[in-house]
Length: 111
Length: 118
Image 1: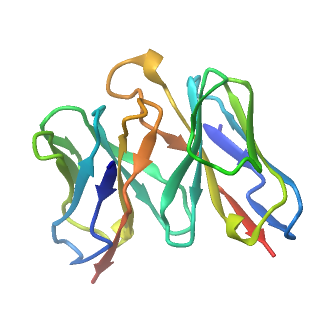
Image 2: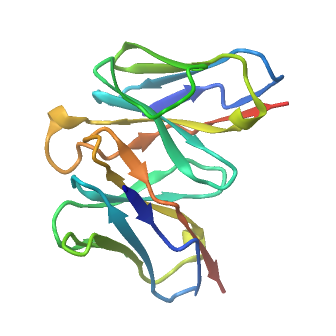
């Protein structure tokens, strides 16, 4: 089948580092994206990996291993405002346009 | 200027009614989408259009009818509303396959339309 799996919840302390994992199953691969969604808000794009390795964007980094069908989002120097849901997304075998989201990980940052 | 705008933001209606949600993007993107987000926050793709043509119809009941009059607009009409249709509906757009490169399927979302069916 085709699917994306993420942990449902993660709790971390302000100032710490947290990693949110995503495993996917798809017959074609067009890149892995990450989105952030605050409660009551819309998903917003964070990061994209088309090739293996680490992409860094400020406090956020994203990693991809295509051979393992696995990626993660790394959030450093956590701030209270990082409390949100985080989704990985890939276009599944339907092609570019079938951008499918993972189950989402709710991150709670505590003081 | 809002990149992807959808209206209305809130919609409360009775079962059996028909309602529409409108979406417009000013990003010059080729591809537009409708997603449904339920109470468990699961984001499910419903439809995808590329340059006004339907590309993806993700086994959505035919009570849902999308319409794309041009590539900047994608509207969603829902007939005979049911309780299970209550959700937040997000419109989104992306550059699309014609853009090539890394950003082709990076989505920009509208603010969402919260539909409550009573």
